[in-house]
Image (cartoon, rainbow, N blue to C red):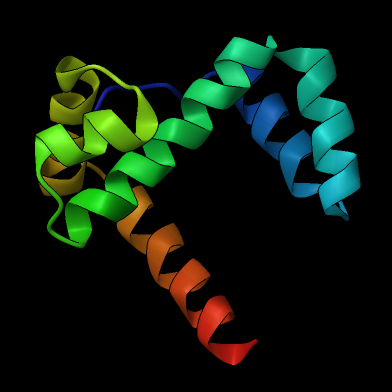
Length: 100
């Protein structure tokens, strides 16, 4: 499933993201660089990944998030065959939540 997304533009983007120091800076940067719809879609995909890992059905995920079953399928494929990005961040979010 790996697609080569590495180029000078994505390299610069990821370096910029790593320089953000607060949630407020993230909100400001992402509102400038992406549409509200794009940002919300990314957030929905992360929630879909969390729900899939917790065993929710497609119907329940659609009802909760409003995403299409095609989006759920893409996220599921990434969870199973991707680069483990979802798994990494979901584990870190879970650890953070448990610590709070």
